[in-house]
Image 1 (cartoon, rainbow, N blue to C red):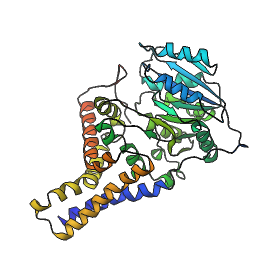
Image 2: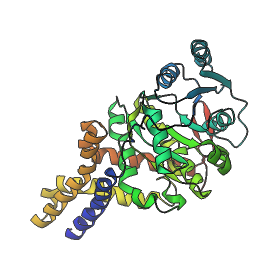
Image 3: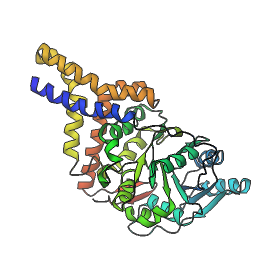
Image 4: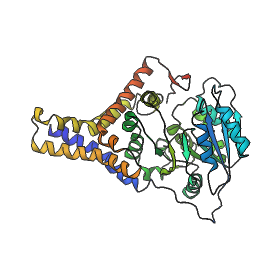
Length: 378
């Protein structure tokens, strides 16, 4: 059992140490100086039945400071009041423009097609792809555009501050930061062009329009439901540079409103990430042994009659598993309850991955926003 404890310690230590090292590299972009000329930005928002969110998103963009911008909203065949709301905003501010999406072509994911159409109708040299549930801070675009310039990247992204309401949100949504910073070596990502090191957050991407068009844009990932990973990797595969910054102070987002949305929302693209056939077993071992097993064994230490050295090793492993989550509470304003229940959150995350893979294996399609999709492969 002491060997098992040692393995658990090693698997808990690796992401903990990388997470802490990445915190020094994953920084909030500074506000550009007044003498810095920033290119104009087209803020591109795909909207399908977003009547509850779209006005807040657009108004947050219009409150931006320090940058020339336009806001282009693509109504993707909404059946609610989304287009009427955007038309009213356009009547108030000439920077707002409503576009209508053409019919979804066969073989395209709805969001990727919407972003593809939006990019073709943009008029500024920078393209900011933003989900309708994101709220920008007044200096958010300027900071992100400044980071794009200073990093020399063609595409940059960051995770906005994540608002959570339900218990399932508190358990699962903060794991976005844990997986990104615990398993992606940012230092290597910035020096090694390997596509597999590409990562981002689909809620917020800023790209140079010229580079975006040169690499093929969203058409390259047309079948994907996982633009957060697939778009940066497509850029890198085309010889373009990508980078990451801390967007906690740049924007906020509440991804899902209730528990069912959390489960199915995370499951819809899981087989393009951790739940892919080649990743699911290693991910289960890495996360299950490193993040869950120490707590289970400590809880059962009396029944299992564990020795003092084994208990000591498992205790250190448990502390290391919690360390990144507690750091996230401070740095990213994540809920403390979710951090303290970290083993439960990881268990649920793995359950979602296996659920998604089993659905794929039996031929059940992913669905979102009233559309069903065959899961992209590769």
